[in-house]
Amino acid sequence: MDAADQMTVGKAGKEGPLRRIVQSIGERWPSLRFLSFAFYSAWILLAVSSSEAVSLLDSKTAGHLQATLYLSSGFALTASLVLSGVFYKRLQPAIERGPLVPAMGFVASVSTFVLMGGLGTKVGAALFVVCGIGTGVGTAFVCLRVGFITSLLNGVRAVMMVGSSTLLCNLLFFTCQALPPVASLWMISALPFLASVVSFCSKSGDEHGPEPADLIDIRSLPKGYFPRLMCVVFVFALAAGVSRGVAALSAVPNLAYDVKQSTWEVLFSFLAIAAFMALAAIVLAFRNFDMSKVYIPVCFATAAGMLLCPIFGEFLPEQGMLINVLYNIFILVVWCLLIELAGRTNLGAVRVFGFGRGASALATTLGWAVATYAHTMFDDPASVYTVFFLVMAFALLGAMALVLNEQTVSEALAKTMAIETGVVDEEKEILKAQSVEEAVNPWLYACQDIAAAAKLTARETEVYILLSRGRSISYIADELVIAPNTVKGYTKNVYAKLDVHSRQELIDMTEVKLAAQTLHES
Image (cartoon, rainbow, N blue to C red; front, top):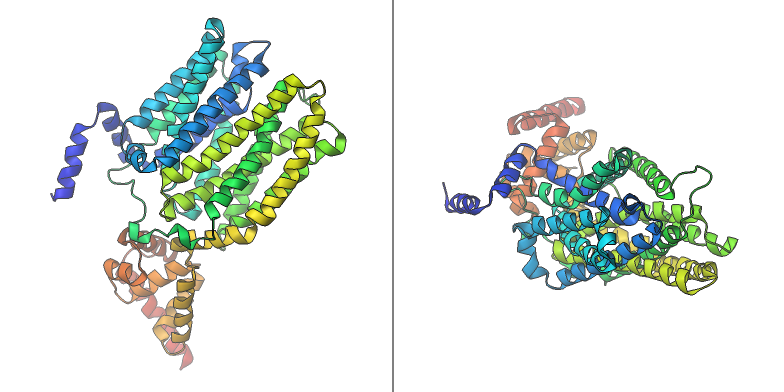
């Protein structure tokens, strides 16, 4: 046993019983940790973004209670996330290893139980606000932990995992609706703590991202890319916050279906994201996924939805539903972009998700504040909404065209996903050199032919060519300037796509192809 193993054992011995139990489960089901995103998102959806949790209070003022909860929780969440982004160096170790996250998840769960159990309204408004703040502060750290966990994924796996977790989140919403009120109360309350606990279900030493040498310097991305991304997130979330606030305060049911509007929002979101996942799976079967292709259509559709209010002169429930469904898809896209920034650049997960999620939380909270102010201070709040949505529509179009356009997103993705796709300029030069060499190198020509038939990516092709020449993992890592663990990951992908199980089988396959090629030419 080397020094590193002894240190690991020493640390394990000092861990509490809960952490040891969670790690024991993680050794058997390491993928369980990624369910933390679904549990965290489900809590946001059930407790804050819809009226499901507040409806358990059976109060005639549920809309105002929801606004109070959203504002108190939202501002506390924003402050905690932004401060975490500022002091990310001190918080990063605690988010990765310490007991801080489960403790804050427990605080959020207890605060939720007090709120949804009706204790807040019985004792007074002050306790309701205090518990709202508790949910915001607690879930802020859960969010940072979930962001760190998801940043360990590569681009393709991130898209599929985030999409799948969002679908599970929606299913949890409908499950909560089907349960009796008491069971629903316990389920909603348990979600923050459950999300924090399962996030630690991983194998020993399995929570390490790329090596520092593999990280991309943020200065190599388009100038000001991260602040510009935050700007667009803020504009988008602000409009969504107003629409949610208006819908809750107006308390207008969807008369066409005689059900709560939030239920139909979740249903349409589920269908839209399911269609998105199906389309993504089809695209990924033939080529790497470009998230920038989703960005423009979602922004245009949302801007069009905002213009419904000025056109009809009033806020329509269908308009709020459309905006919120599109916002859910937009958040999925943005979360994937944040994953790439956190996992592939030197920004760090706590800083990226602290500022990124903080911008979204601040905007939606301000949106609710605008809706609450207009609803209580103006005799005709519809006129205020009309002006606001008109301004927001043009602001979003301006942000899309000038601040963060498709070219900017594509350029950033091309660099942050370089480890997976091999599309940066240096790799293009390598591939270009290989294409020149293959004219005089039959072995390389055979490798390229096999790689094309197996649909290997550019980086997988490079790894395969070096493996076929008998190169070691360490040699390939040095040659391609990536971490050895990253090479091992690509090696597994190559073996799976070529349907081989060892280096010798891979070399034999290449030699057979070369022999057939030589025989054909002769």
